[in-house]
Image: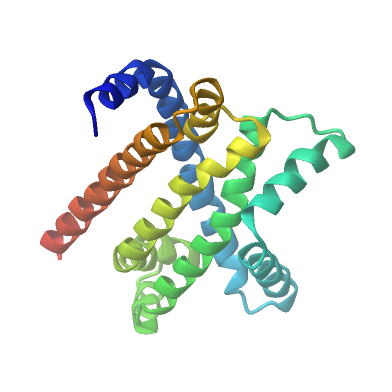
Length: 219
């Protein structure tokens, strides 16, 4: 890359720093909401009661098998029709969490069902309630087993924040488009965006790897 290109990218750093900060906030909020929503979905999805299991399963399949961009549009343009006038940022967080929560619910379910049923029975024999046994015995082991899958899903979630440019959230992708419209330097700008996403996803991957190593040492 030429010196002129490098100078150009350097001049765009202030705008990208602001956009990158918004992207990080957006991703973290979406991750927290998606992980919590996934746990809430996993319980009814594994329930023996059909009236709980069928709606949860239907929701998970609907969200996993329709495009995230369409879901974001439905939320952003549909909520005002029922009197919910949220900002584009809030609609984006809801949309991302709604879909990725469905994927995470399936990951949680797989992890929980991989734990030997006798561990739950032993916890019950010690006087633990089903909820307490799940929280103290089953869930910690299940989460340790599915950490790599959780990490992959959260990395996809981070990259999916770029879709919110379509509803006016001024994250990195929309900022890049605005700079390109002003300067015409599409190649340089998108290289900068790609490097920024690479840095973020690599940091998340390293954090997850450190967590895996810590869990392995504990075991």
